[in-house]
Length: 360
Image (cartoon, rainbow, N blue to C red; front, side, top):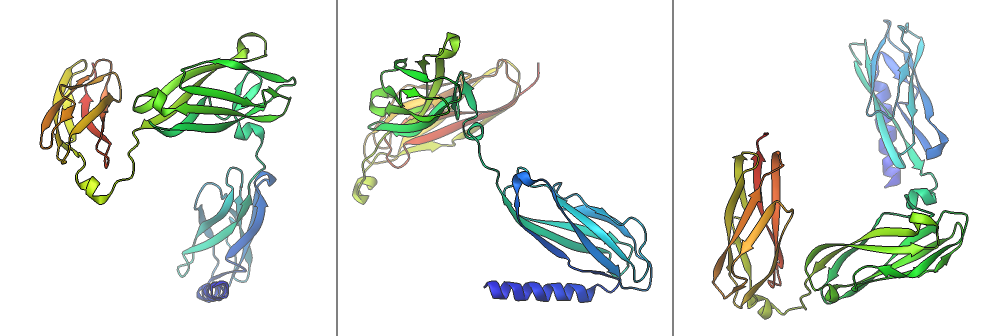
């Protein structure tokens, strides 16, 4: 395949050179090869010759993006004369392979637009601790002020490790005690972190102990031996708690409860600021066994769901009333209510209300 590629490239380049009757470039493509991201801009001059019988002028050079900054011969080039077009590429913040083009407009009627190519591979700059752990809390560095546990099933105990770095000039000692809910545990390895040493903060989350469903945001506070207020580190722990359903046979799936939502999106249209509007969504158990709606949760406090019945027999329906309060809001609004049920195929579903709130 490589051999075929170079044959095609050579053929296309040769054809390119043959088609240029008034202007000929020594090479219409240039590969910078491997360059360093921190090495600064690289440049290359595309040299051309006027192979026609009339003077030629480069009218404009348009780069494919701002990372190539061209300069070129501004005066007319007489027959037999030479000119250049300079291509400059700045590799900063552009790691990996690149391929850019320069579109050249000339005064030649035969060759009004010419495409030049530059390519190469940018070696990324070495990453620093500050790059990987940008959040500074007193003398320690973390990636975020959040420990994201991701998906946690309600029958599971999930443990994750998070990097921590002592950026100070003195040892940092982590206290074993911390403030937080009893279904979250925290451990430090090592408990004493030497200057410029990296360690781990280990967070464990008990989905069963949480005894709830949906996106959870918890606050925890741990302490170090640092002086003053910086000794207290307040962090958030995120978890998406979902119900666990064991593997099912095809027969069990056919006989399972099934939540069906009729018209899951409602648009209130234009409403006045401060208006309170409501709509009703019909929820139906279209399965063959009893459906239980575990929970309904709105995306914000401005939206309130109301459900009078959570247990539905096969074929039974119930109204889910959703009320939206537009006070303090303006413009397009999109709010959701998430429905959690024991439908094993689709245990999490959403209904959506939309509106456009007029300015006061």
